[in-house]
Image (cartoon, rainbow over all chains, first blue to last red; front, side):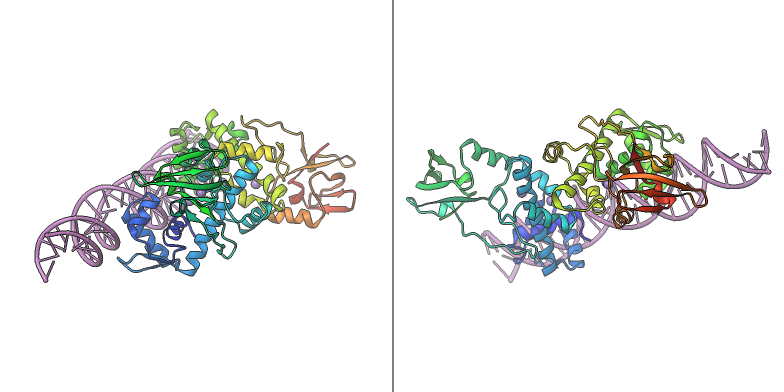
Length: 217
Length: 217
DNA sequence: GAATATTTTTAGACTTATCTAAAAATATTT
DNA sequence: AAATATTTTTAGATAAGTCTAAAAATATTC
Ligand SMILES: [Mn+2]
Ligand SMILES: [Mn+2]
Ligand SMILES: [Mn+2]
Ligand SMILES: [Mn+2]
């Protein structure tokens, strides 16, 4: 049995070290999970004890195969619930994350898989993040950060990296949504901002905003 | 903030003392919740501290108005989730209870009320139990235990009191479902069993089974 | 109504998950 | 390579929720 708290740590390691394959530092986990390094050390030991993590003192932590699968299942549930909330319960994309944080810990394989079917086996959540399948696999859609796009080129907004409600409401306010066609017009070296053009407008976005926008070409 | 554990105690008191208005004993709660009397005493004190329960040492416990509302909300969520699992996710009525035990603790008023709407504002769960509204109110359908029906009379199976999977699968196996028309033919004093007749069959049910069947006339 | 049985509460211990402060190990700078 | 800074671990404390065993209160029986 994996506790709620253990699931949160597994998820953090999974997200910080590309599916848990790259060693993640104690401090990085503490920051992600908003706890203290000492708490992280304790929990990592417990995960290692349960064969969910590989841990060498002072060397950081990776996930074992069963840890990776457990983490992927949590992520799968999180993202499926987010789709459910938007598609079936009229939530907006900035309202779903906190509720999904709770729902991702519900234990019932039948529930997850029936939910998946009800939603028509979606491949991405409302923020453009991929939904792992039962085996924890997903196919990456090739998307690049908008800052790496040469001025003059265009693509489709495929993913937003920050899922906080403030950021998502900023996008709503400025009529930017997943699927929108975006053309990069100009990069401004002074403040690293970007001028972009959508079908409805031309606008300047700050570097902080641009860092979180990923487009597929 | 009401914790998961507090919610479970509130629900137990609510169920044991008709919506928490009748004083419930420490031992009764302990048995319902499968814990020990000493644990119950501790928790009751905490509920009283938070003004969710009225507690007088050695005199049992009732719910305050806010306690009653909190308990009713948990019951509302439990039963709405059960309807969801059956209606939308192909669960059978014997599979829903344990998952609903988890889902009932998810905190989001929007979620509950949107779920209610998605399901078409159901009034009863898959076991015939009434679903409280936002204010914690529900209208009782008049149903009586089948043992109190005079032989010769008939009614419709409206509610089953035991929601355990073993009991529900017994009913499935014997083709008894909510909504079925049942006629009481004979009461057998030797073992307090009952002979009943449905549209498809005549059968004898034990007293243990009969105690859990409620019909509306 | 006194003796006995049952229920309830208290006292103290344990587990999980967290924290602060100090010690130990590793990394960085000079 | 020493000195210094940073990161990580350990040690000990705390809070929530639970338990066992003993004490206190209430209920039942004779
Ligand atoms: Mn999310
Ligand atoms: Mn979580
Ligand atoms: Mn139930
Ligand atoms: Mn519960």
